[in-house]
Image (cartoon, rainbow, N blue to C red; front, side, top):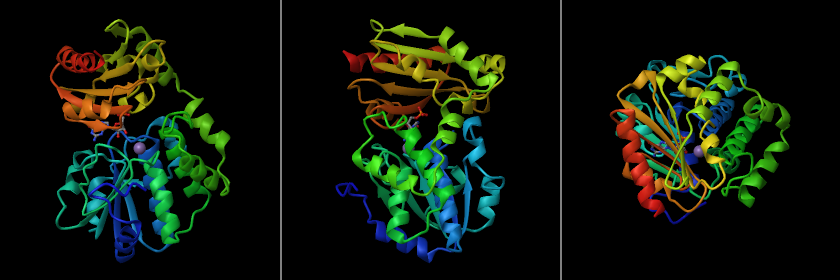
Length: 330
Ligand code: 5GP
Ligand code: MN
């Protein structure tokens, strides 16, 4: 664990806070990915096993690829979560307080907030912060927490933590694939994770709609700055034509990213539920620090994977973001 952060609290402080709590709301960042879903549900299951009331919210819509790993009733609405009158809120994999449901962040000061995360841009917005930028995923931190607290892990919990690690490391390929990530993954396998099933459902199985949006993404691929920047644009019309939603965009960014010679890949997409702003995802193949770049645009993330939202039209957002990338590639 990274002990250097001024906001770092020890695992034992987190365990003390969890032990004292009876009703716990667990939440993560919007448009949840494998780490947000996996770490949240794994923690929920582990806390339920020791008799806590633990609910998960703010995790919808669940992307198609993860649906079979989520049981009915696992994720409830924010209103239902508020109704349990929690004495502890745990925010997972959310780099900033704006990234958790507003109704929950507004409880800060009245309900204890525990912030567990691995994003470099996280300033420690919780009352207690368990931050480790050296962890490949929030799931890895949750594993350490469960081990340190003596919480039991079973096959379902191990599978969810495995999903968190596999997806955030790009199937053990990205530079965050540390010895500790591999060690944690190896420990999880002892609980009987069906790796083949997880891999097939998450990476080798596309609905017709997911295939259609990928086709459109390839057609919409453009380049800038001597082809060092590759970007894809997806409008609400594109989502309608494909018959899918923004939750099915999780690795569309890999399409511009995998082109030879590309340093930075960008995905610009509209969200029907939030018109008037453009969602931006970025991935770096080189040295361009996207956590810093996206933070300068009001977002955040990791050095090699970050995001932000820009108010205005698609062309305005593209102008702003592509200029910011170009300036950093010079
Ligand atoms: P994605 O492109 O998959 O949406 O996000 C890439 C990474 O950056 C993820 O780890 C995500 O949590 C983080 N991220 C995306 N948007 C934001 C944002 O607005 N603020 C912060 N702090 N992190 C973000
Ligand atoms: Mn993560």
